[in-house]
Image 1 (cartoon, rainbow, N blue to C red):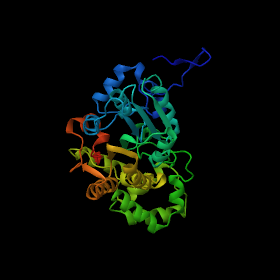
Image 2 (spheres, helix red, strand yellow):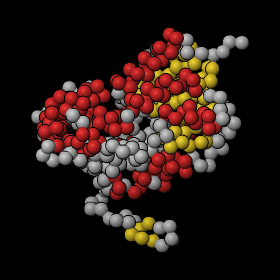
Image 3 (cartoon, rainbow, N blue to C red):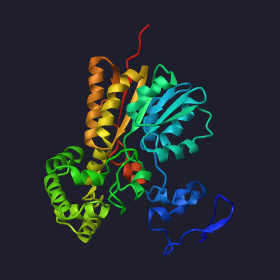
Image 4 (cartoon, rainbow, N blue to C red):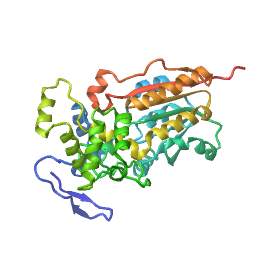
Length: 361
C-alpha cells in the first residue's frame, strides 16, 4: 500500500496510516475520495450496493429524463445540484445552446461540482442558495423563465457519510446537521432549546416516529444532566427508549429478510429537517415554480419521506385543478427493484412531475 502522496509544492509527504488492511472511517478512504483514479474500486463497491465515499449516485435518472424531456437549447434549473449526477445528464441533452442554473445550499459541495463541470460547453451558472432563490436567479440571469425545474430533496451521500456533519446515525461526530454552514442553529442547539412538546410534534410530523413523546421526554430529562451534542449520545438515548441494545438490534437485523429501519433513523431525519427548514424551503419552491416556468415547461421533484411527498402531490394536484398546470403525474414514480439493490439509499424515493399549461395560439 503506497503511503505517500504528492503535495502542492511537488514534494512527497506521508499519508497518515491506519491500522489493518482496509480503511475504516470516512477520512481514511483516500481512494474513494479520488474514485476516478481507481475505477476498479468504484466497480467493486457498486457491485456490493455501496456508494464510494465523497460521491453520490443520482436517483431515478432514467425516469427523470423520460418525464422532464430535456431538449437542445432549453434552460434548466437544477435546484439541488449536489454531486452533479442529474445535472451532467441535463447538460448532455440541452447542449451548448442551452443553459443550466445550478443551486445548492452546501457551499463546499457546490464548489467541487463547479470544478467538476468546469470544462462543459453548456453555460452553467452556480448559486450558493436553496431553491427558494429561483425567482431571484431568473432576474439576475435576465431570463423569462425555465423550461425545466428539478429538485432532488434527498441528502447527498457525501453529506450523509461525512462524520463532521452529524447527519447520519452511523458515524460518530458532532450533532451539527447543517447542510448550509451559514445557518446559525445546529442539531445540538435544537435539542438544547426546544421544549418537550415541540420535539415530540416534530418527531411525529416530520418522520412518523411512533415513540415521539417518550423520546422527547427523555431528551429533556437528559439535557438537564448533560448536553446532547454527539451522534452516539442521541443514538444511545433512542435505543434506551425503545428498550434495545446494540447486540439485540444486530440480532434483529440478521433475522430480518430485508433489513429493518435503524431505531434512530426517524429521530435523526426529523432533527435534520428542522435544522435546515427543509419543508419551509420546499413550500416556497412549490409556490414560486409555476411563475418561473415557461408555458409548457416541466417541474420534477424527488422526495424521500411522506411529509415532502404530500406537499408535492397536493401542490401539483391543486395546480391542475386551477389551470396553472396542464397535467401532472397521477402516481408517484418509485425506484425499480434493480436500482434499489444497486443503491439501497434510494429505496424511499418518490418522483412526481407536472407540466405548465401551454399558451394556445
